[in-house]
Length: 150
Image (cartoon, rainbow, N blue to C red; front, side, top):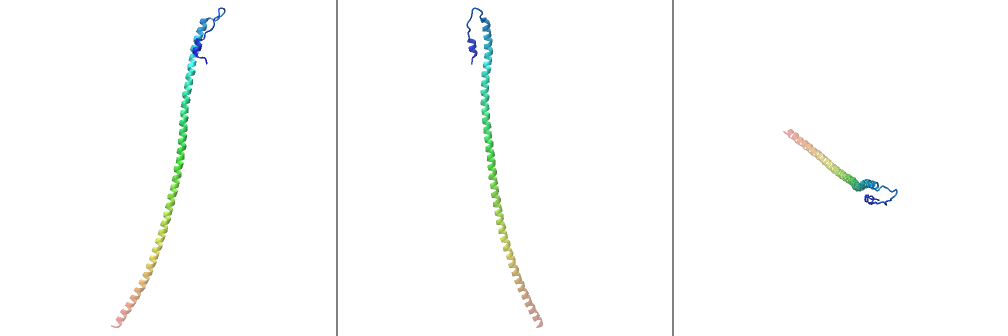
């Protein structure tokens, strides 16, 4: 690529007959040099801006990848926590159900024992009642006999 310095240093051979006016050529080359230098700087600035923007874009893409990875990891962790919580809940429910079954069995056993105790007490009461009735009858007989003797 031709640089502004190349244009400025360009020399033309001069012809004596029907040649270009050197002053006009020099003035034109000066204008061309200024315009070309301006465009050359703009291109260089644009290239630098593009490089800066590409670097910034790369940085943002890296951040985007990091955020996506973080999001995926967070989702995975949330799923893991959810699964662990479900498993723990199932364990707690199973333990509670087993404890409830044990309590029901224990209470049923206690109920049967109490029913047997009540049955035994009813039998004892019947025996006691029969003895009392027998005792009262014998006492009544004694009383009748004692009244007859008088």
